[in-house]
Image (cartoon, rainbow, N blue to C red; front, side, top):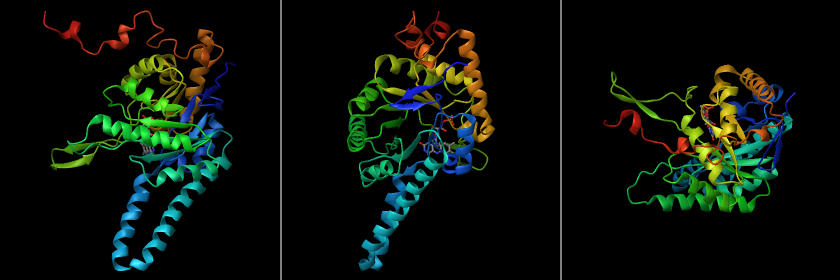
Length: 325
Ligand SMILES: Cc1cc2nc3c(=O)[nH]c(=O)nc-3n(C[C@H](O)[C@H](O)[C@H](O)COP(=O)(O)O)c2cc1C
């Protein structure tokens, strides 16, 4: 049987497939089932910076009526929210045999940075920072925002002994440059990419509605291109593919492009733990057919620096097919 084990950010995983952070990974019966199915690691549902911030705002409003109780309430509610998350991390850790990666969804430097240490003390084997804020002003430059993200990563990575991964958006002007910045600030892994909640429009009711939260099976090509390029241009950091990982075939493609791991979310919602079993079987079959003994044997084999015609990753316009004759 081929060896599926990988080293992801210094964590020894029995397989390259991770359960992505979602509501599913806050349920103990689910994470136990994923463990049984052969998952390599669990990324726990995120704690949101907004949760802490909105509680603080609520308390500020309260304090205008009862100023003397504000400090107490602030301390109590913050502690309560954190305590709940730490309990979840501990419970997941106690229930599974594989590494557990906690997750914080954040957008700025704040109180939660200190909180990262408490997550480590709760037994998390790693921390994934899901960093993004939608720019809603014309007065901020891209580099100001990006430098803010890098500062957050630097502060958290410096504070922790466990490895820190950063889950990023795809819309950077220079993605390789940004990932290189994350690496230089101490990130050990980068998850490419987060898939955001998106608004859509109902033209009959003339209102904004939520678009589908789930990805489609074919939705992995943008991720694949960047995986191939970033893994070649920024060596020395582990990359994890996220978005569109529905089958073993996509896991294989992402590893060939340079991923160390791949994360599943929608497929777990739609097919349950069987999606993991099936993907790992496909991975074994592929490796046996191709004669690869370990994942390292084919990781990055088709990335930007390892292929004969790197322009295949570079081409972005359809000039030849659709250009004027
Ligand atoms: C219902 C739902 C909840 C999610 N919650 C989180 C979360 O708490 N933290 C996070 O980093 N990503 C979260 N995600 C994003 C997923 O981890 C993943 O990156 C995204 O869904 C793309 O992967 P997929 O194509 O396998 O679904 C969530 C996604 C869904 C659909």
